[in-house]
Image 1 (tube, rainbow over the protein chains, first blue to last red):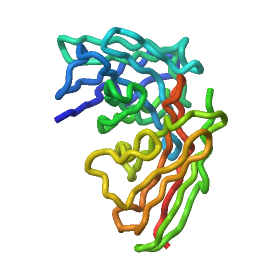
Image 2 (image 1 turned 90 degrees about the vertical axis):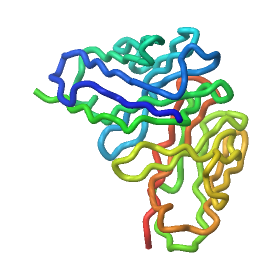
Image 3 (image 1 turned 90 degrees about the horizontal axis):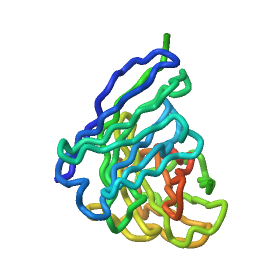
Image 4 (image 1 turned 30 degrees about the vertical axis):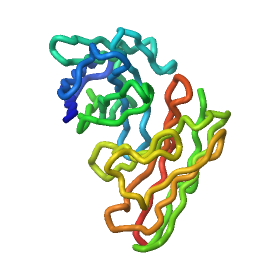
Length: 121
Length: 107
């Protein structure tokens, strides 16, 4: 079955760079049409899509955060990494990674459990 | 970016009730819409895709409809486990956008 799990720091200081890793199983990012995305959710607020990377290395970003985000994949390790620069307290949120399939390339059918990242000095 | 507006923002209902949640897109998105259920402290669960197709394993009391700009999620007979927050998502184009959520509470 498909599983995903996020890992990374729980606390970062303002202006620092956040690096999150999504480690997955049950699928391969070398399979045509498959993608892995990142979505975040500030405490008590709505979901916000951040970035998505596909099997062919096509990358998509939220325009409002594009200058701060980088998404990469390591197919051999079954991992996707998201980096976000210049972190601010407003970036405090639970960060999720999620799988998208070839039939629904922009829809997330399997999600990780999420990881809470707090930005504070 | 396409803006997704859900209504109501919150809703109180009783077990057995029929409830409907609405999602409106700021422009036409064909039927490129999904619905998610999220319980406190948990990741969202994928319910419906292509506006009306039920994801495998989702109870048949959930249904979706709509196309263009107006969409609905209906729960035909509320069960205790259905009290949660529901989000719509448009996958018509990038950036992918979510609605602000509808919190379904027990009356």
